[in-house]
Image 1: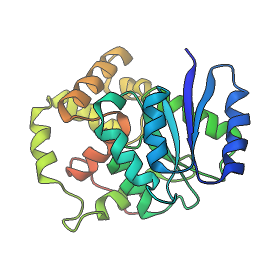
Image 2: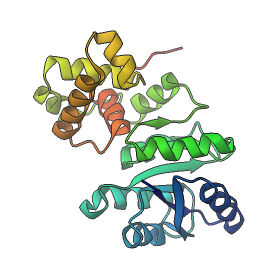
Image 3: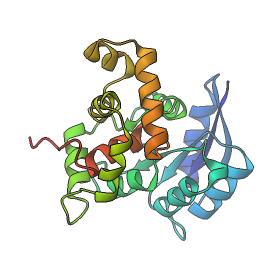
Image 4: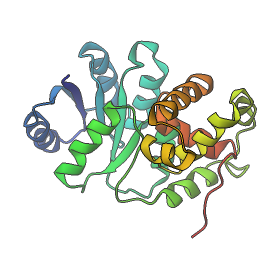
Amino acid sequence: MTIRVLLADDQALLRSAFRVLVDSEPDMEVVGEASDGAQAVRLAKEQRADVVLMDIRMPGTDGLAATRMISADPALAQVRVVILTTFEVDDYVVQSLRAGASGFLGKGSEPDELLSAIRIAAGGEALLSPAATKGLIARFLAQGDADDGRDPARSERLDALTVREREVLVQVAGGHSNDEIAERLEVSPLTVKTHVNRAMAKLGARDRAQLVVIAYESGLVRPRVE
């Protein structure tokens, strides 16, 4: 299946470079280009995009607002947003994850990293930037709210999870793959996938990145202080 990619960046030269790179891959194609967030939302729907590479800072409707709009639209439930940012350690990163982004990537990343990010996002995995540590992201998530990152409403929603689903959620928040979780919990990867899907359904998460956010904001997982 060909991954349909939408490019959203106010720099035409950068969009052109991304288009050449993406279109060179046999399993993906660029289906549209947007210079602002509002246009990105419209084209995501019109072109049935699978992944949007979204610049965080654009004139008018910025990437953060556009990501919220995409995440809130049931008609765009299949769309995954990867935030492109110049500054990988940034409050915008946390806000974008909370807004519904599947992850983020630095604009200075290597071409192979960008292509890998598109495939990871299209597959529903969490993309938390190859250049950023999970512990750092966790600290930002925990510091995002005045109450030390805990969201009482989400804490209550965790009550719907089984003991095993909670165990799997903790492992997902640690950045582990299904195969790694299966080995740690001594179950099959298919069983892990089932638990992940059930947890996503119960918690209203679009993908694994949102499970990571929920795990930290609910207090189920606490950030490691390096």
